[in-house]
Length: 399
Ligand code: ADP
Image 1 (tube, helix red, strand yellow):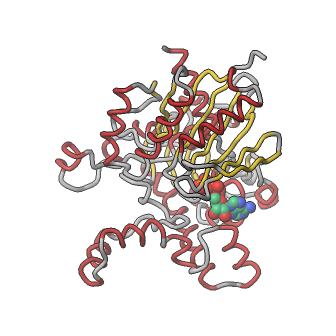
Image 2: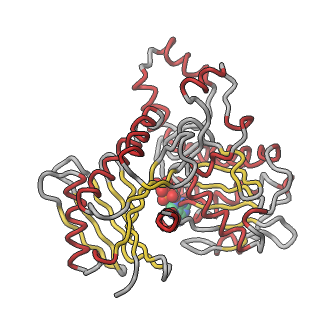
């Protein structure tokens, strides 16, 4: 077989997601997840042609072991020889990386330096590189950064109004995340709208467990709702999104919260989960509203949708024209309820839904769900793995 495959890796501190992608046939051959790494419950699930294989990992239950098992599986399936490179998702590229980069010792050192900006993510992403370098020593590995697409934001959008030195000395500024997703759906939207990517003006809403919204002018990100960390912006599954910074001082000074407790509160116990006291899962909250009229679930979803609509509307200041709004991510792709609640607040932007199309465009479907006289409102399933594979190949072609 002559196909050229790219193995895409998204490595967390206790999990490792992967996809094997064939760029020439535009086909995802298999996907998988190693989870509970670092514990005896560690297991590996591989999905190929709709069939799932689940196996426990023997000790040491670590990332290297998981990759060894994946390699054994790829050999059994006679796929290993067709892999030409690995593409790694990296969360933070700081201001150093605005494009995908071939990984070498120097790059690893630089990414380690950037870890202070993403202490939860970059070190975990590097564990993935270490494990895959051991298993695939001869293959090139490429880093694709979540922050890269937003490196085109102008100063007025990326600076916080705090002493400038904090930016120049410590890199404290807004970076934005979900860049590969915003880039992917913006490119797809340009095709649907029959516009050149370099001339398309969009607002893209990535609504999943994490949520971010971007303003895209002439194919470039000019503003986005996440900031120095993924905590800024709209409310999310368990993250608070924007709050009054004075609230942190109040919690510290009046209620004795420690840094660790604040982190837990704002990243893990807030958002849909915190407001509903029920779940961080949008589907569960919609069920609770529709079946039981659950008051806190109703409030949680109202706050969630209002803040999304408010952020979308604020990008009037970032854009001079708008070709359309795009929904993506688990909620954006599937929740006709959230889309209705958001778009009903956007009539000043002349965005109105065709409710039948809205209802019908779910579960992997894509298309324009706007009414005939409305500005386009597109639903586009994201595919971050595809972008990583494509950009990995582009780096190889350049080398
Ligand atoms: P992640 O950010 O972890 O990749 P996803 O993009 O998969 O997350 O999004 C997860 C969110 O999508 C959850 O809140 C889930 O409830 C929501 N979701 C998935 N399917 C539906 C659906 N059919 N209706 C409403 N919400 C959905």
